[in-house]
Image (tube, rainbow, N blue to C red; front, side, top):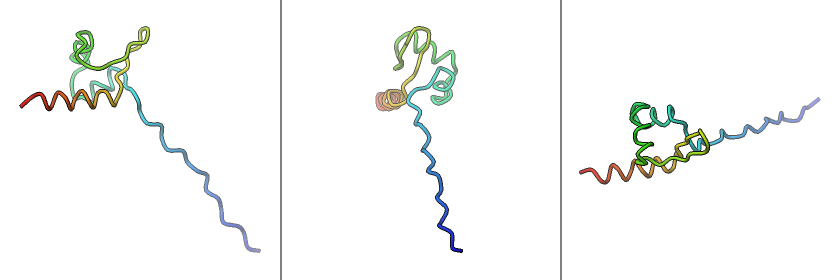
Length: 73
């Protein structure tokens, strides 16, 4: 008896990371959590505050970091 080829279940691609919390964002930027917190409180770094939760949008951080790199000779 010839069997039909096995159907492989489709694996969904991983959900892209849209935003990070403080610890993750600090690690991604290569700075301490305290430094990132200071920048956040001063409004220097892009972030979203929802109640007590602070999120750092990945795309906004990339643009911000690119702008910072271009501003410095």
